[in-house]
Image 1 (cartoon, rainbow, N blue to C red):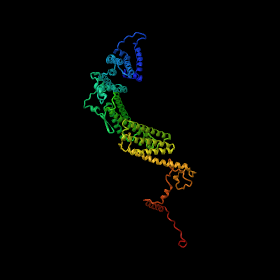
Image 2 (tube, one colour):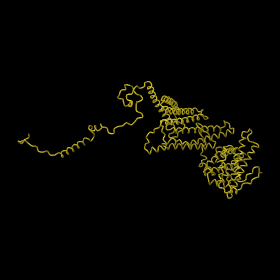
Image 3 (cartoon, rainbow, N blue to C red):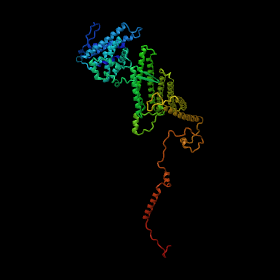
Image 4 (cartoon, rainbow, N blue to C red):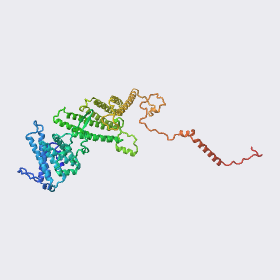
Amino acid sequence: MDITKFVVSGRAQAFGDNAVYRGQLSRRLLKSRKTLGIATRNRGKYQKKDEVTAEQIRENPEYVRLLLLTSERAWAHAMSMRTAHMADAKGIAGRTRSHIISRIEKAAHTAEHLVSILSDSEDSGAKSTDILEAFAYAGMMRGAANFEKQSWEKCLKNYSVSHAIYSALKTSSADGETYKDLLSEIIDPSIQFAAYQLKTPRTVPVHIIARKAFPTSNSFLVDEINERDPSVLRQEDAESKQEAGVEDVPKTLAWRSREVRIEDAAIALAWKATLAAKEALTSKVASSGSIVPKELAGAYDDILTATQDAVDATKQALDELRGENVPQTDPRMQSLQITRTAVNFEMISWRVGRNRVLTGPHDGALEDYAELSKRELKKRAKAKDENKPREMKLKQKLNKLKERVALYDGALQNLEEAKALPGVPADEELTQRLEATEKYFTALKALSIARSHALTGNRRNALALLAHAHTLVQTSTPILTSPTTPNSPLNIQVSPTDLSFLESLLDGQVQRFRALVHIEKKLEENPPKSRVHPSVPLIDRLHEWPAEGVDLENLVEWPPKLPLIPGKPIFLDVAWNYIDYPGRRTEEVEEKKEEEEKGEAAKPAPAPQKRGWFGFGR
């Protein structure tokens, strides 16, 4: 039957306007009655309709929608009147208040009638989930009626039924977001307000209040809820509270030299989630060696969500105290103001840290335009060319620098918000640190802009920006001297290591661009007349005297190219005959002896010589 989904979708179509919602319900109710054949004819006499029975619901589920539309129309009528008379000078009182209560009473009575006929599952054919959703809807309507009557105990009891049912269905159903929205927007705030009127401490969480107020006499609800989520109604004693995480929530919050007590349960739970997310982020950064910046920045999502929840809970607590006309001098207001500054500063700190991660190593100080993704790294690993530089076009480099400048602007904007937090301007030390951090990011921004000028050939502007950035870093170095924990996630605190690295880098860049601007100025004053060797750089012609001047645009070959080198030069073969290497002489002697023996063996015997006439040689 999808009772909850039917109600939530109908309210969403009106976009929060209860008067519009009432008109939509009237038209849908007439259409439903025509479908069932029970609509009053035009200009016909009205006849009171019989109550819907379980047998009718089994025959046609449209009767369930008829009851829901009737209840919702009465509720929307009451809420529209409440909104219209909210700005009255006397408030909602007298006949208007009675009319509103009567309309909500009708809505609650219709919802309770739906529960009674659906509970007879044999005749109605309803499932256990449909009966649970009907109980939750009836509890929400009856709780709204008791809220208007200011019957806080009954209101808390009715809303606790809806809280328990929706909490159980949230974990066991696939459509958990719908139940979660109902809990956070309607049920939990009503339980908190009713508990506050009953003098319940703010440190008690909502689920504990709802669990204590839940009526355990209804065995059907207890069995069905325990079947879906036993932790919703589990009663905890003093020994098991620590295991369930009730007593391990932080009781105090430290900010600078002050420590304040957390009196609101929602703030305590949100701050506990923030501390847990901080520990998870620290362990992930310490365990992961090399990780892509985008993936590391994604790890900041949990802690940013937790800090945002803490900020929202603190703002809601402050709004409630202001609505009760609590003066600013009240200790509760003072504690909440300090808590507000602490949680907002924590959120801003992690925002700045996420931007620092996205800029790259050393906060983007290195001139690295190629940001490889995980897929590209795998491709290079397969191709075995990880060391091959990635060529990028000028437009891509400028876009990369533009992204970094946007990240630095975001960090600077967050720093401005931090300086405007309550209590921060009075803290001189913290203000000086924030201003020094602002100068650090301004220097990084100037460095990126200077590189964009250098890429487009405007070296003089680049030199001016680099000199400005170097001056900013030098002024912020004496202030940012507090060391940071190694392998800790980046946040608003800048380490002295990063600061000294940027200072040395800017010092070298300033010297380099001074030389380049000087060369450019000399070229403008004395342009080269003629070029004897237009293609050969000066470094390869140092043996020649440049009689006609030096071509400063052709000092070295850049980018360098790999020249051709002979694989086996001739002079090495010639040198072999004149150099005595160890062991070479012995081998040569043996080779000569072998050649001589072979030559003697192969040499033919000499022929007998002829003598002269008288027996002796001529």
